[in-house]
Image 1 (tube, rainbow, N blue to C red):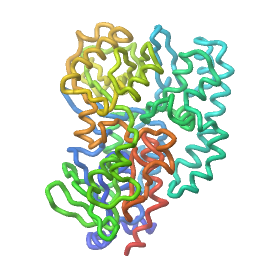
Image 2 (tube, one colour):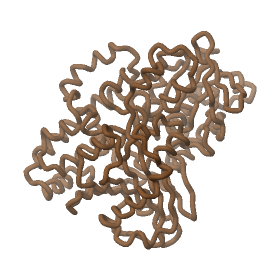
Image 3 (spheres, one colour):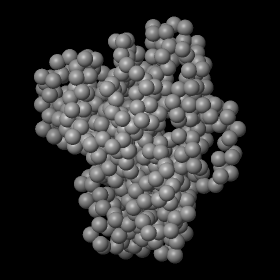
Image 4 (tube, one colour):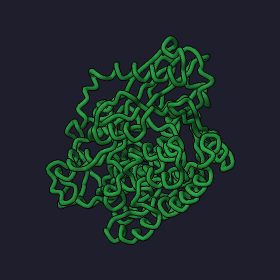
Length: 509
C-alpha cells in the first residue's frame, strides 16, 4: 500500500523522490525501471534507439511485423511478477500462447525430432531416433532438474558480490558436473550424435558454445520443460509495449532517441549522465542496461577502474555474432512449424569455426522463426513472416559485412530451400538483414556480439561483471553482461537482483 501511495502522489512529491537513471530500454532496463519504481524511485529510462526494446525491438516493413531479437518466452512468471509489482495483471496487456511442440530439430540426414515438455512424448521421439538412448535420456533429464533447482531457483536471483559467494557453491558445482561442458555431460548419458546435439544446443540461446560452457547451463532445458515455451500474440514487441506502459503508469518516463555519452562520477560514485548532445541529467543512482564492455570501456572512459580495466575488457571472451535475415513471403508455408532448428552437417566443427577460429564456414546451422504459424496478423492475408538466424563469428573475425552480407543471405536462402522450404526464392516479397556490424552500431555491442560476454565458467557468477559495480559506487548493471546472464529469463533475473543490491528510495531521502 505504501508503494501505491507514493506512485499516486502529486507531481511535486514525485519530483522530490530520489532519482534513478536507467541506460537502455531492453528487457533488463525495462524490468529494472519497474522494480525501482515499485520501491519508490523516480525513474528516467534513456534509450538510444527510436523505440524501447533494445534487442527486442520491432521492425515493420511492407505490412509485415518482425521481432528483431528474442522470440521465445520460457519463464512467464518473471514477467508476471513485474505486472504484480506495478499493481496490474499481465493478462490485461499481453496474451501468451503456449507452443507445443516447442520446436522441431531437423538434422542434416533428413531426420527430425519434435521437442516438447511431455516426458512420454519425448521418450518416444528419442526412441524413434535412437532406441538405445531412451534410458540415458531419462537419467540426463533427472539430472537437469537438480541443476535447475540449484542453478536457477537458488542462485539465479542472488548477487555474487564476493568471492566467498562462489566458494560456497563449489561443492554443488562439482557434484552437478559443473566442471564439465554441457555437451560433455550429455555425452555421458546418450550416444547418438543427433540426440547429443538436440540435448546440448541450448547454451547457444545465451551465447555459449555447448562444448565450452559449464554443464550448469543444462538448466535451460529443464526451464523449458518446467514452464513451457510461449509466444506473445502480436510478437515479443507486445511484451515490450506492455512493460513501457507499466513504467508510464508508475509515473516514470522513457526517453527514446536519447543516447548517453558518459556516466558522470563524483568522488567515486555515479551521480548522473551526460548525453550525446552535451546536456547532463543528475541522478542518485545509475543503472546500465548497456553492454558491459561498452559501459566500462566507453561510458566510464577516463574513470579509474581497478577491476574492469581496458586491459581486462580486451582480454575477455565475447559471445558469437548473429546474422539475422527477416523476410516475408506471398504464400504460406503451412508445413513449417513456429520454431525450427535446421542442423548443418557438422556440429562441433562448425562451433569451433565460429567461436575459436572466427571464420565464416562453408556450412551453417539455422534457427527459423515463423511467428505467423501462431499469429497470422503479423503478415498480410495469405502471407507468412519469418526470420532465419545463423550463428557467425563476432567482429573479431574481421569479416567485412558490408561486402559479405548479401552473399551470406543467399546462402541462407539456398539452405532453407534445400532443407525445409522448397521454392522459397520465388515467393519472397520483403527482406532485410542484421549482421554483427549492425549489432555494434545499433546496440553498442562490443565486437558486435549477440549476447555480451561469453558465459564460460571463468566469466560466470562471481567472475562476471557484478550487478553492483565493483569500480563505481551507486552504479548498477543489468542485462546480458552481468549475473546471471543472457536470454530473456537471465536478463529479467539481473533486474531482480537489484532488489538485493539497491536500497529502497527512502534510504536516499
